[in-house]
Amino acid sequence: MTCRPAPTASACSLATLALLSLASPAQAAPVCTFLTPIGASSTSPVVAKSVGPGKAIGRTNWNTDFIVDQPYSSYKFFFTANSSDTNAQYPVEGYMKFTDGSNLQVVNQIMNPPIGTGRMFGPFPAIPGKAASQMNFKVGASNDPGALGFSYRISVQGCR
Image (cartoon, rainbow, N blue to C red; front, side, top):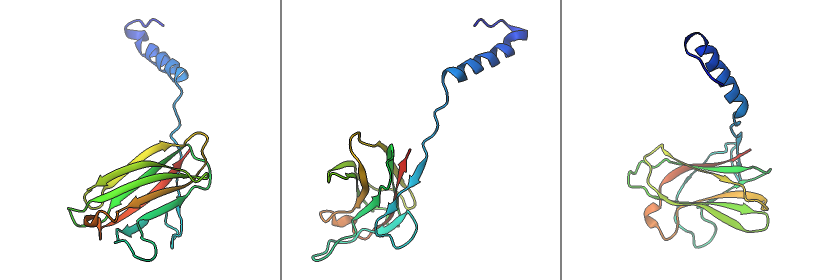
């Protein structure tokens, strides 16, 4: 298409925009849904916890699993610091767990965000040939006593 100056310039611009919109259709933004935490005592998809010390007997609260109840094309992990301690350091790990018993670590980071702030990790694409069963967050570790006692919020989304 050849555009001429002045009177036809605006008509040419509109025609060019119309052709461009036909040549490159807009990609639809993914639709994301919060996954339900396993064993949650409320209906909220956001889990609030404090990093606690390891236990000699019983389970710690370091791991939180979120159920994958349908196939998604990608996953997002969200972490927000709630501690007022500016020196709080959170060892954060995230895993995709699969129905065959295997898993894939997608997050492994030490976080030091100010209170009320955090980070989104991902989106992480689904693994071809694998069926996801859970997404797992692990915050805190027995070998990092400096992280004990800090509170945080976590959630996970599946996207299509």
